Length: 272
Image 1: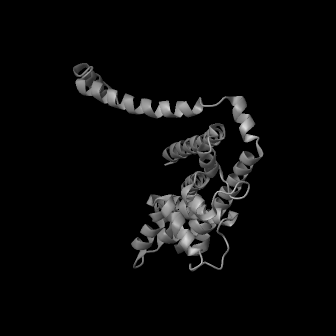
Image 2: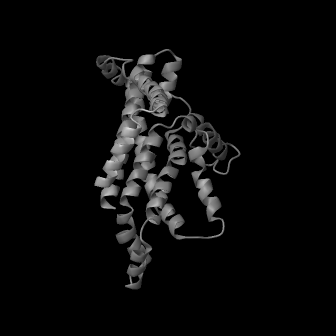
Image 3: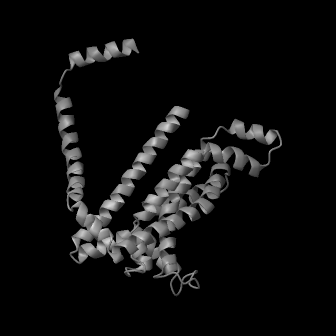
């Protein structure tokens, strides 16, 4: 470590302030300044008093509660279906597994409107799920959010399961533990942080979902108006105060998500 520090000091003395360093700092400063400026504009677009008044209005408060309720249900459904699915993909190899893995990731990279249109067709008059009445309902919101958000949990949980030392699993099975016992007592605890990360990402993605939700559930105040739909509707009608208030709430949620991610990443580094 001492030798490394001495070498670094020598390099700094040889290149105290190169043109490349100046150019690099300038480019980074312009880009970072742009990001910070845009965020600052949103943060200063309303006062605290106006913010409180807006979120207390019945329509805005209704959209907040609806978003929290649907995103919570989505997380529960993603855990119930996604964790077993992730474990299956992590421990099983079969013909077509790579294609299935790609299809599961498809909602992550597909435009939300495309996902919404696919759900609309599937549950529409000629779709395979046409007997389930979910269009323009809260159930439609949950299905749209689950479709676009659950792959984040599956991806994170699968990575966590794949990182488990297989010697531990083999030792447990050799000692007579069943596969379910091994999954419940060994795999799940060891993959806990990865699953938690996936839960946080799934919740944040569901809370911020707009395109697919708008296609499937529409924009009906007090019925299917989530926070993101409320932002769009109020912005288009000229009510920037309501849009800013909802945007600040979602930005705070995103900030909290990043903090949790950084904490989990640091915990993994310390425990690993």
